[in-house]
Length: 121
Image 1 (cartoon, rainbow, N blue to C red):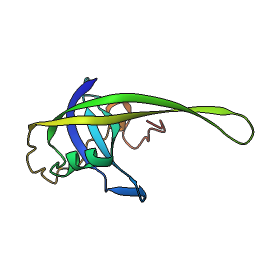
Image 2: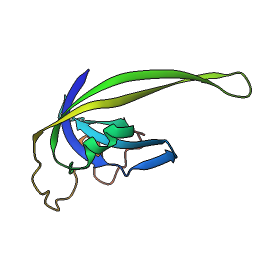
Image 3: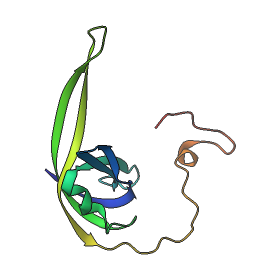
Image 4: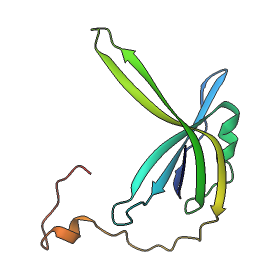
């Protein structure tokens, strides 16, 4: 699978154990530019170096595997977790230095002045 989006955040390298390391990457995916999605990917082991040269604003093509696994807690309840694991990454275009512009407030689109939107998303 692959997706093209803009780098929002590049996480720090996490040394989970002596033999295991990982790193996160948040991509802004704007299939509908009015409501962009922020998708979390992870790179494992030697693939963590794929994120070294990335900067926020870079447009990237991310090739990844979708992985899922169950986890059963002490009470016997099973939960399921998904992860998007990067195996290849290409920079489509380098991002421009972002100006310090105020972020738009999506709540202001449908709210009256002075009215706060309490939606969790």
